[in-house]
Every structure is written in C-alpha cells, then in structure tokens.
Image 1 (cartoon, rainbow, N blue to C red):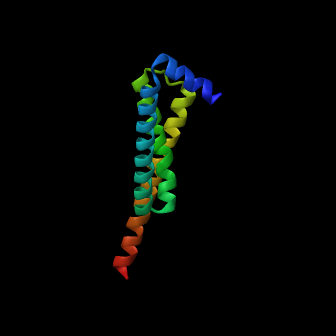
Image 2: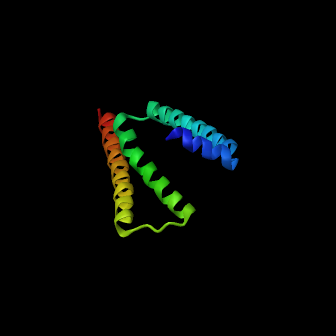
Image 3: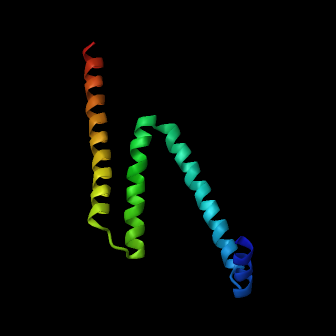
Length: 107
C-alpha cells in the first residue's frame, strides 16, 4: 500500500512537497515534545496532568476556528468542562498555598 502511494506522489510531482511536509511535521513534533518535557520538569505531576487537557482544549478551539469548522454543543461542553476544571484546580492550589503560608507564619 505504501509503494503505490509513493508512486502516485512521484507521478503527480508532489513527492517533494510531501517530503517537506513530513520533515516540517517531524521537527514541529520534536519541539512540542521537548517543550512538554521542559514544562513537566518545572511542574508537579498533578499540575502537569491537569494542564495537559487544558492545552489540548485550547488547541482544539484554535484549530477549529482556523479551519472554519463548527463546534457542537457536546464539544463546547467538553471544552468548558476541561477549562473549568483547570481553573478550579488552580484556585484550589492557590487557597492551599495561602493556608500553608499562614500556618508557616504563625509558627
């Protein structure tokens, strides 16, 4: 199945474009993974696991708007749930940190 596809790319003169797209995609994916490792090293595992779905929701919305697709009610609900959960997590961590700081100052 791969060989006929490659032959079709050669026959239509699109092999160079395909190779460039594959190279650009590979480089972009490498940097995406590299940045994720950098972020992971700076955050707690829990914070990183909460942040990941928020980033994915942001990417879904951005690409949906970029390509002009419509967002269904179910998709919008999932995005809102993801972002809302991230916000609540951030607020809870903030309250927890303030409480811990208050305890440290009083002792």
